Image (cartoon, rainbow, N blue to C red; front, side):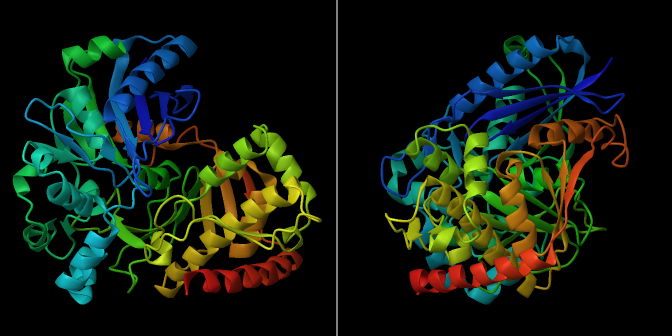
Length: 493
């Protein structure tokens, strides 16, 4: 029997999946830790995590897989890695971490990115980078250079979170073209690391890791890592991708016109296309998709809402640590529109869809005499969907037509109310599947290891439910969304 293992390195937890190569069935899944991993915020707007914490949780999650479904570690034929995007990890020549990782929702580099966007020129940035340098990895590295020069001068390699885990597995520092694009290091026109951006930020290209293929041999597990994980030394690492491109892969979203969505800590809609597209204000972003090639280009347009599941988590604590299923039930008891209570879920750092404004979350129309926790919980789910719809409208203006989206049956999509509001506000068909990012990474690892083709990678994956828009509900939510949108315009003016 042969297996692949997939890891999904999130900001809340590390997920792992064990896949049977022959049947495509997921044999075991594990999450570690049981409670959300901490984020450090030494300054308002900052968000940091210790990369070694991720590596410890990879080890714990692997042990949990072995407990659920005991397997022969020598039969693992490939390892795939998905990871939280846009983070910055800095290591020295001994591969030791120099400072906590500046992760995706950290806002400290917003002004650095804005300055670069203006200095390099909006037209140049959008033509070659397809994005503003924004609050992405390259700008975060520039922040370290400017504010922590003693650390910057000790950097041997910089990497994304998934690159760090791969380095801990193999002992080798490497990255992918897709990863370089998510860090805004990639020149789409020249299909190379952008010398113009590096020069502007005064970054030596030697700090970037070697490029390996997204699918294929990226390194082999070292004896030290093998002993920690209970697998064989020499096991190949054969895939890595950012969590959203990987989520799209997990849902078999690989062709132009297909779209994936997720609603975990952050909420994302990710649509695939085969041509150059960008938003003039860089409120949504274009990255190299996992199955891109020079002969058959594939890009992914990503809109991200930072404040999604994290709002639900905050409400859970604020309302007495209710069970999430109970929260969903209570939310469903309140009427559509939550009796005028509107929530704007922008409380998790600068929001790209708001041109990197950091407005904070806003509760509008709260009336102590008529609103209960049911209204609060429903208004949160409606507000999250409305913010996602706002981002999808930007994608529509770019020429993308999103009529059907695929999602894993997890996180916010476990809520029937959330699914109803999403399908009818966005006017899309939702397909829910029995998969997640860790399973997707495990499937992709099999492709990278040459165990099966792309067509065979999705054996064992099932569509669990399809949610169709309903005309009366569409009309009802259209009116509620318009009122929410009017409130948003007052907030961001």
